[in-house]
Image 1 (cartoon, rainbow, N blue to C red):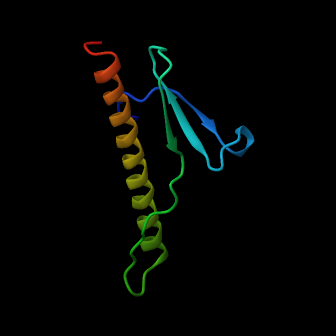
Image 2: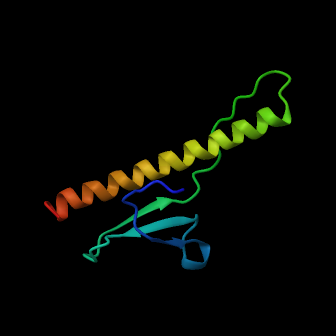
Length: 92
C-alpha cells in the first residue's frame, strides 16, 4: 500500500527531449506555471557488505540502497513543493 504524500503526477524527460539525463518534472498542481526538475536516477549509492557476504546480503543491501534513494528523492520533491506553496500560494 502506498503512503499518502503531496507529490503530484510528473513527466519524464530524457535524451529524446534534449536532456542529458533522465529528469522527473513536477508541475504545480494548481497550474501556475511553476515546475521542479529532479534527477530521476542519481545513480547507485554506496553499498557496504561484510567479508564473505552472501547473495542474501547483497540482495538486502541493494534493497536498502533503493529504499534510501526513493526516500531521499521523495524528501527533496516534497520540500520543493512545500516551499513553492508557502511562497506562491500561502494559505492554500
